[in-house]
Length: 485
Image 1 (cartoon, rainbow, N blue to C red):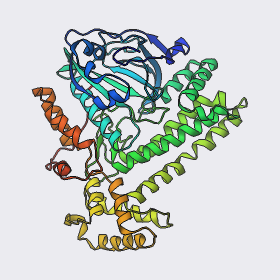
Image 2 (cartoon, one colour):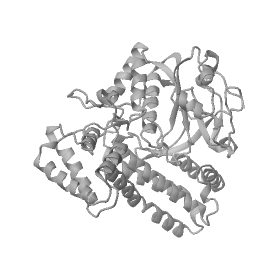
Image 3 (cartoon, rainbow, N blue to C red):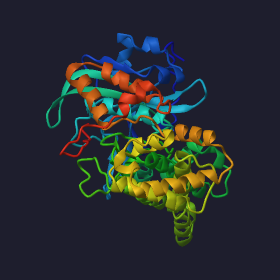
């Protein structure tokens, strides 16, 4: 182990060579550390203070390779907006796998460190704004209790990169349980080498699901476990109004973490058809579609495993279909459980789903804010006259109160459950844009740091968070997000 705390063991590099290309990042001239996630660094066993020195910033820029690291770019494929493409890390390099003091294994990846063998026409670089955006959103997701990749650091490179305009370059250091994706399995299946596919599956099981290694059909068990994790993950997205924006199969991890925060955003006004991404013109990845797309992506994963599920193809297809068919019920079970918590309900009731749907329909009809509506219900603050004075809501409220009264838990216990399930703050789009504008155009990171501090404990419901609950000024133009990297 080095004095900085780097403790690498690079198991992915021991997979068949077809899964990656070994290469170092492209050096930059004048890297500058602009944000470091000190708590995350310390949890990884790293010396956060030492990492902030000018010399050690070189690691986050890709100029200096830590002892024990083994940089590589991963190969994968993916259905992008439904169209299959062979891909790979076009602007990311996996430095290595850090073994933490707790014995966990995590990927340390640089995003934006230059061209790779999979870059095609791209420059392999990233812009400062999108890297800071991923930092903010991924850390907010973590605080919300949603499985996600984490952001360790962002450095500016001193370079200008060309997109629609000239933008300051930057590199993000991302931490993940792994970067194995549905698309990684699609890549292996697309190559047609069953031995390589089996090697990848065995590696994935050992790394993420060691509890199923002894199963009679461990590959079927792998499929079942991934279905469970994705059902739970996407339900958590829906419950906080998160819209990923690009649910391509290469953006779905086998570990069940949220990955790739490109054109993502959180919904303000409740509308199931909400789309933020400028490239999603048909609404494929709209808020309401996310559970369906999750199931579709998992079906593509199941297809890759067919040669391993059973030697008889018909039986393999049947096993896959039976497993994938469970996704909808698993998702719905997770979502219902989450909605019960948001409304202070501890036990199951036959009419719960209709109770929840009725509330959401009213929220949509009267165009009210998703997060703040649940916050108002939590604290019985019925100030929004657009909804709370309507006879339809008052009837719903009576029904809800009767439902609460049917359980043995006290009003105080229900209220505590609601406070722990309904965030006071989310990364409001206008607040994120405000932070990015200050950082990118003025070099002022104080706005972003304050936002990160407020988002770090979203269930605190303290006075400091109050101003971050306010909605943006009305605009004739709907909010749009751009990949931008």
